[in-house]
Length: 189
Image (cartoon, rainbow, N blue to C red; front, top):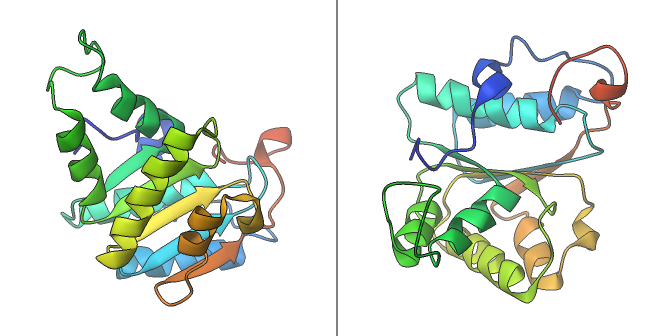
């Protein structure tokens, strides 16, 4: 799982304690903290670029890893590249030489899955289909999932939107904090 993970660099140091709790971030902060305490259902955090969504997702990941939980943190555009790369005969991205099916199954069945920057991927029929299959499987199996996105839910393709907005299994939180990258503040989006 760690070999698949996109959690690296500054994200390895993200905690709830290091998160700057500014106006507009309280709901997202508390929802993320609750999810980290008991990961079940889904948590979708959306808002503008640079307002701490990635920091909160990484803080959830780091908190769960500290507790010995298996969690997979993936940046969605990189996830799709990783899946596509399974068809590359050279496979220079990883040495595991996992097949496409093995890669996709590992991601779909992760005990806890964090999908960062959902909607930042190039929208293609293939990408939409893979993301739908991933979300649909995790919905059917009620697997704990966290999704961060800069988009509003209505901006997603209808099948993806229905999975993301499923209030029966998850919580949707808008982070209205300002863009930290443009002013004083923390790293992360």
